[in-house]
Length: 165
Image (cartoon, rainbow, N blue to C red; front, side, top):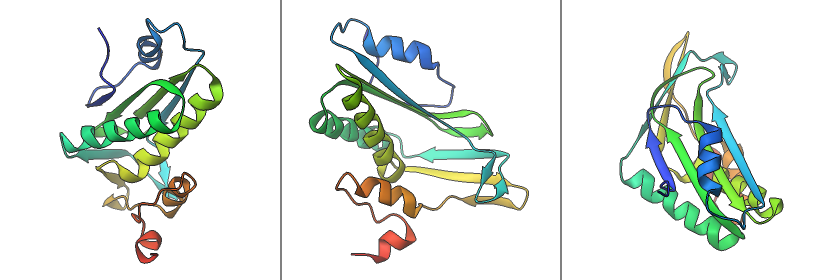
């Protein structure tokens, strides 16, 4: 049975099992590249005890599916898989997995990096960090918009990006 390309879930994921599923039954795979994001203990200099992630069900999955379609068109990748966790996550827990397979490593690396840059700026997730000073929603970062821009795309999500046109 083939795994879905996009899964939004509260439970943790197993990198090894997901990579094995991605390349199963595809003898043309020469490379699998993975990105695993974790909840940082420090953000903007403040200690983070936990993070809460919310999303818009249905819309989030469709948005990420569209990202994967774009990556499949732009790069010579054979398959991709994105798992993003939602709910309450403690510091150091896994939060996101992006897996990309290709015949060659270069395209797999590019496809994975493209998907992660796109995911950081375009996927409809909302993050709230809990610190000793209280809880606050995480704003878009200009550096994430800049990372997306190197692919020829713009988001305008950050305060600096929103003012530029």
